Image (cartoon, rainbow, N blue to C red; front, side, top):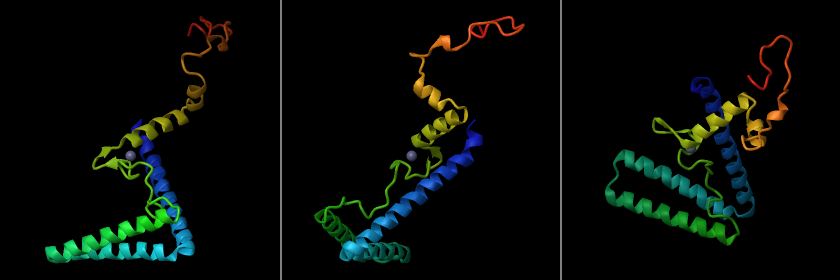
Length: 162
Ligand SMILES: [Zn+2]
């Protein structure tokens, strides 16, 4: 059952990531227009974070790395403050994940995330046309009388008995 849905699930996760990136882009251009100084801060944070990654690779000394990290933390804090002061959520310029556990990858390491499993189940039900049926008729209000109680041609049993 899982095999057939893997491809579909992969594209579902891809779509989620693309959608969220689009939304972030939109939020960024909104901030760029209304509060360019906040977006500048955000850009600077990204630049410094990239610098930090490069510096780690280059083997910059501990003290320099620490300084860079502190600068980024401080800038981030300032950005949050500025966003909140302007009436936004502090994560407004942060990529949103619908599942924080796997960051919308579906996997954590090599194991499937819980969101993957629930998506798989709903895909399965969707394909078997059961999703709506299940929503409307759980077994508590399942109405047996909906099934015809008469014999069809030469069938040995009425549908209800099957
Ligand atoms: Zn997940």
